[in-house]
Length: 226
Image (cartoon, rainbow, N blue to C red; front, side, top):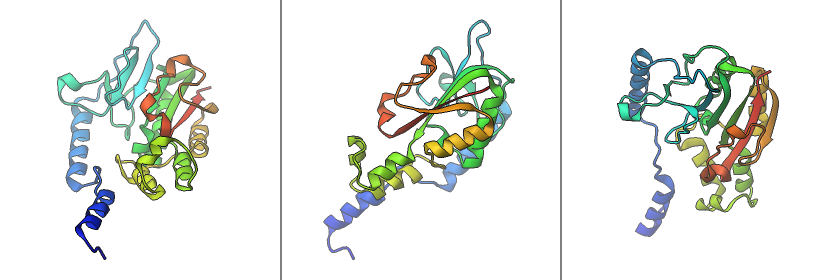
């Protein structure tokens, strides 16, 4: 039982979160998806004379050399090279992408949706091309929960439980990933040469565009389409 106002404020600091799922937000998202898939579901704007690299789930991070793709935007000033709802088939021909970079995107899908997306990316990638996937690394959060020294940025949470709660329920996260699980999904999809790397390390230098601000919590995995 709370004994004073100070204790109440301290608890509220832990229990008040920016991201809360509401029916209004869900309906708004689904309406935007329906309208987008009906009126804006176009094929990606490719570069016919150059190689085509995909930056999938780009948010505000857009690279000039990539085809930048994310959810449907209805203001012309906010529109991207390609607008998609990743839960549905990609409006893209087979064997298009010379490489795919997707940063902190997969965790916003349920596991079955993530598996479907990997199948779609496999279909649309060219033989020999590579995909670089970055996601929050569950193993780092588990280490933090168990009191291990991971990165000083984990100290923004006073307890490991707060960190796990943020990973699993903030930012509209719908799935959790570590290397073993992501490797399983990629292998089942058909990808080969699945490897874990560190920040901005990998096989294809063109895909090493990781955001520095997310390195502290991130798992970096690359795989290749045969």
